[in-house]
Image (tube, rainbow, N blue to C red; front, top):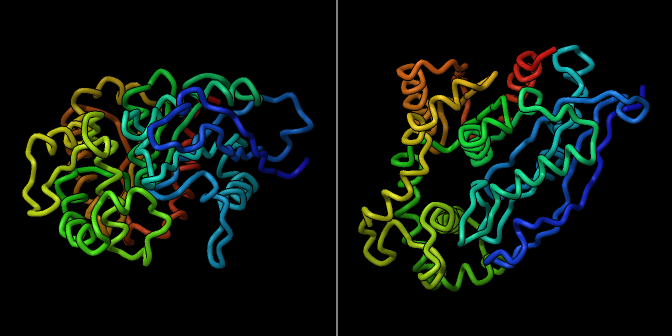
Length: 331
């Protein structure tokens, strides 16, 4: 049997054409093809993997001295009989601001539409099983947020979801960045200066990342084509006073607020898996606990695991989710 390999596709996106940030509409798309793919006519299930904020599909393939990349991990899981052979698709939804949250926004571009474009592209160019029950989506951090919300809003496309430490309960996971955002705006000479060319800013320390995170989330959650930067901030950049109207727009994208409206979609999934570290640096374990309580109240079947770790360097958790995805797909 031939070994697995990564094929690099270069689809040109209609959804990202002329996006407001001038980010590329042609993006490299890494696709993992399982052992034996080339010499058979067999069709395979598909797992879309979504990277976290500031990451892209290539992030899953990075070399690490103490950890497997996703190709090595998948090869091992298959060889050990823990996962069936499947195709892995690793989209690049990075923006000049660091990420898209996998949403459509007039301030960043139509990244939700781009993901749905890729589903069609992969089905047309690879031997997939083109059915929702054989199509899963998973991710970590912002990728977990994207995976969960895509599955909530497009259950006709994705029948299984794994959300690793995805953004939830915005009251705790984002507001902690607001004071650092305010200090960084002053330190770096204004928000407009930073966003005009983020790559030129030095050092890219915690202040810089807090600034970019708040700016990027504003572009995703509270876009405003009439505003100077194309979005509204949820706080006054000089005084720090919360803008409650803008903040309500952010909260409309919070999974703990969305869950009741999408309960039936969630009930239709073959697998709803969530996990989070009990020492998550962004307080996401609390959002997960709230979300799980609401799932239980709504009667939505799910699996939730809380593990002893933080937010970073937890790719080993795919050893849990990928076998579950494999087992939950039809034979």
